[in-house]
Length: 66
Picture (cartoon, rainbow, N blue to C red):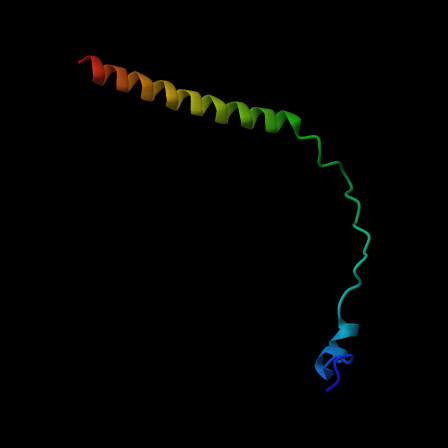
């Protein structure tokens, strides 16, 4: 087999793949902006993190002082 030739199974498979450049289908309705939902989610996550930090600090100070 020469180096400039592909094996037979590769030569057969070359015509069976999809072309590289395809145009995407445009959605019927816009998916973005989802800014309100993302803002709400971020606010809830931030609030939960703050609550965990404050509760941990409160518990630790209570244990240290008593």
